[in-house]
Length: 564
Image 1 (cartoon, rainbow, N blue to C red):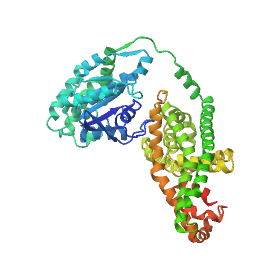
Image 2 (image 1 turned 45 degrees about the vertical axis):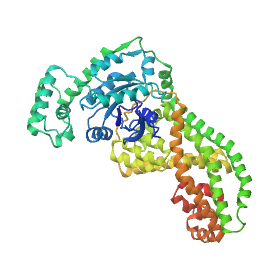
Image 3 (image 1 turned 60 degrees about the vertical axis):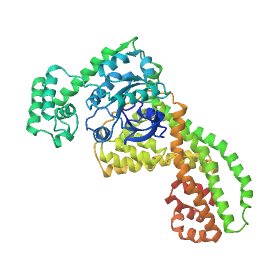
Image 4 (image 1 turned 180 degrees about the vertical axis):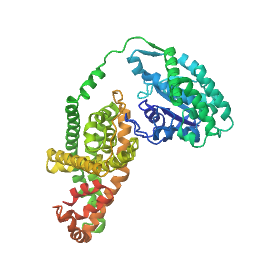
């Protein structure tokens, strides 16, 4: 059985996915974080099931990449049951997507997530009545605590076994007449797709369906003109308005507001966090505290951990005769292990935990909003901050996240600049090595210089590729108290790359460097590389270590510690 999670951005889909399958996907509040669908495995009643987390989408149109990917998967791939995840506190908006999904005529359940947030706003939802209207199971959940998720899986299994497909709800009479007439015309010509879904997409003028319509284009156009003449608006606007009105009617039937929403502490906090003056002060304070805290924790742990290796290193090195090749290999490998444990992990782990906490709390999208005006100066807009912020964790997801940008030119510039952002591994090496030798102010200076290079490079590339940058439209999610489970899984997902890829390379590189030193070959390499090290003002001894930067940039920095 394949369970497919569908929902609008920031509805908690990826959190549910992680809870169910244990897959260490990145979950955050950024719109479009899940650019491609993600697969995971879970077991239900002893049966292995596949869980798919599709990109967040507001509709099944084809106006952007996320919507196209979601619709393509739902129409072309195996889908045994759809789990429609809706934000319970924004139910009227979420129901518009639900109505579209019902038109696919696939087994389906509706999940009302974040019911705690809805209750905080005084919103009480009658899930029984909603289930009766839609003719599908409806489940209330709180994803970040796991509440209701067991029942959700049980209901998904029931919907699959009993083929509970729900029923598409009719529009107002005059619109429904046109939809039904076109539906009858296309029936049997849709290539296995639901006739009503195809009819609605033709009326909306969807470009994907317009390429090869099941009817002559003139016939389809006559239906659209009939709808437009009757309502005085484009046919796609008529259909979307009908769907919106239907969602609002359902909302009014099933929702009861027990008290008027009051200005909450979170709303007051936003007045400060996104203030044109105080917002920047808070931004500087937050990131200063982040790096200062990481430095303090790292420096507190670094020397004791390195001291342990200093004590055991002579004993391990005695396993082979001193001066021999095996001795050099063992000592070099041990230095690589010590570099990871003593230098990287004390800084990397707290940095990743802090970054995950900022993501899950909902603060980072507000950073994008604040920095929009600055980004315009380098020819981009605030949405480009999203890949940059992800770049502090790893450059790979940062480049992947550029897909949320609408412009090809913005995606290209942002992808190039994202590689300049110090990722978590490089950041902790800067904090670890530079702070160790020169102090935290020098480390912060290098960091600021790096960001200045990003800004200047962006300005230069924007002059080479000039284009009017659109304004920023960004959904700002609510604040959340990050759960410990989410912080640990997200940090482990990012830490795993260092442990499984960078650390083995570090150990192997350290052993190789020790061998080069054992045979005296490092002098020849260092001499040959003086054409690079001399203009940079670096000692000749570091030339060999720069070679390892081709594999991983942070390897060079760690091995400098061993070479000097």
